[in-house]
Length: 226
Image 1 (cartoon, helix red, strand yellow):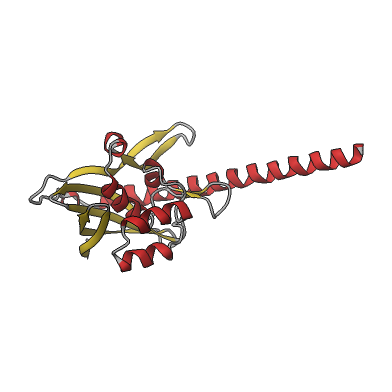
Image 2: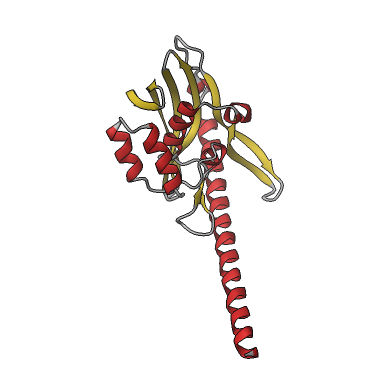
């Protein structure tokens, strides 16, 4: 009986060690990707003039809610380029806007990392939206309910794949949003990172969503490469 208890304890301890090791490895991978991203973005910024950072102007007032910023990380003892959020906006976000941003953050990288396993992918924007893990059933159910009349987006949500950092990654650079007259307008700037080639390119999109009560659908989407 005593031997059985010791074996059980060892098994539990071993499982805990493996779990901690996976979390540590995920953090190391995420940190490495963040450092590489920082170098690529900073190099790109130094190679471009201020015309790359034009301000979008439309008939409605667009509020900048997502952007990138260089910060000093005392643990890494260096400067890293990270995604910053308007915390006040996310704390008071409406249901339709949460659905729109949740959809975008489910298809574009936003500092995502495996939280213990590749099935539990935690992302910065989705966490701010309280939507759980990227591509989780909880997240997909929420999005499919809001976009239930938009077959294209529902299909995308059903096929959702976590956006963990790879050699090529798309991520957010800036997001501006406005909402008026049952319409949500989004101006998105993104970065496409090619870690293997040590390069970064920029792209942008303009999107319009129609809001009908507790339903949202995408009505217009214009993409371009900068």
